[in-house]
Image 1: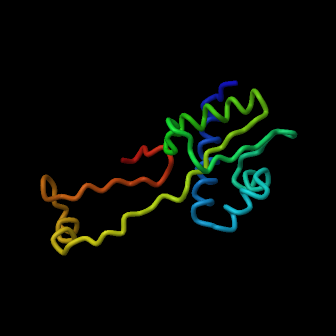
Image 2: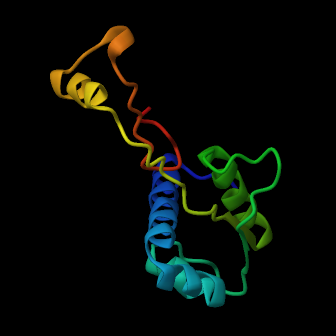
Length: 130
């Protein structure tokens, strides 16, 4: 069953809330493991009665954890089969390397070209803002 554009947007928003909440709250992440149906409902993902929930923490080879299309396809398959597989990757690690004073000056001055630092925002699984 294919999701219409509204359903797809609702799913993507709810799935994104699940990821962000799981990454920022150990309590929610533990509830996701112990009672996935209730935890998912908290974030807006309601499952049909009797549905099987499979949480995948170790993402299979070839399934990129940031590829929302994979998760949408898995959700659509779940609507057909009653078996919902949700990929919940580990919390992304942020590179905490220090910037030099020159790097900070370039950022503050709005430098561009070879002296500029590339900054990409990766705040959601779709990576649409890079």
